[in-house]
Figure 1 (cartoon, rainbow, N blue to C red):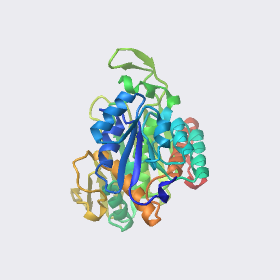
Figure 2 (tube, one colour):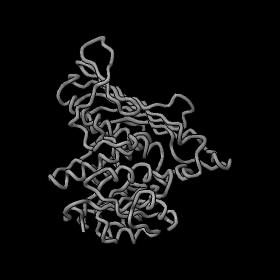
Figure 3 (cartoon, rainbow, N blue to C red):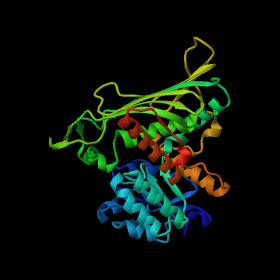
Figure 4 (cartoon, helix red, strand yellow):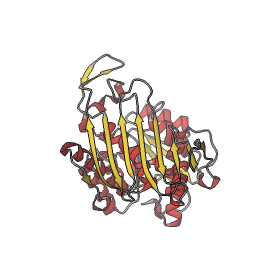
Length: 368
């Protein structure tokens, strides 16, 4: 039964809740424990021992080594799929077979075809869906969007993204070795570019057209723990130039394997001022000319979560849960869904096509 038919708290089961450093244990589980509208009722991993360990650590009543048992349990309304991308398809289908609402990490699938099939199956099943495009809902991003809409910097002229990471380069960890294979759909192009580009599009609107370079500069990678050398087929650089439907221009560079000085920085230039976002999504701005950018305090109304000491990444995930609860109560559509995921999958494909052809390529999100 879908959570939209439940009164009271939304009961959540998390697949992939391995103890320690897993994404679910670092983000989903701690923030769910702070949200009054949710109850964390079940976790699953591939081993009963690790599932039990996570359950004890977070006070969860049910622990499974079988994701199907979690999805079918009557105490679970919303199934969270927080595992490696190649496992998304199977586990989302498991949740849908149980007719449960489902939250899947980005990307939805290893390909657009896979994502399309999952979106269509979810629609046919009649459940609610969520996709892990959480950064678009950060308080500073929602405030930025409103500042732009209210004319704080006048008409937007340009936006620039410079995003680089030491990960996904010449040396990788054993746990991320699967990202070296482009077929697994988890690389600089499909994850890194998509996450940070989505944030900007949510703030400034859609692109009209683009040109791109998607490149692979590492032919092999060394696994840090073992020294094993493996082949690399996944891209590690994406360079993007585009035009928004508003007429503003976009310049973006996404890079993996940067040895020093990696950073994430956004700048947005307008006719009357400028805005900027730092690595931690701190927002700065200035109006007029020749003035230094200063931090812009986020008004309290943009904070959806209760005070807690969970990490910034956990809070970003928490905003998706908060938006979902609000959507259920008010009939709104704030939380990102499988429809949003499919649109972004199509955009990633369009970027790859523009790189292959070397031509400026139109983009129509409504055609996706």
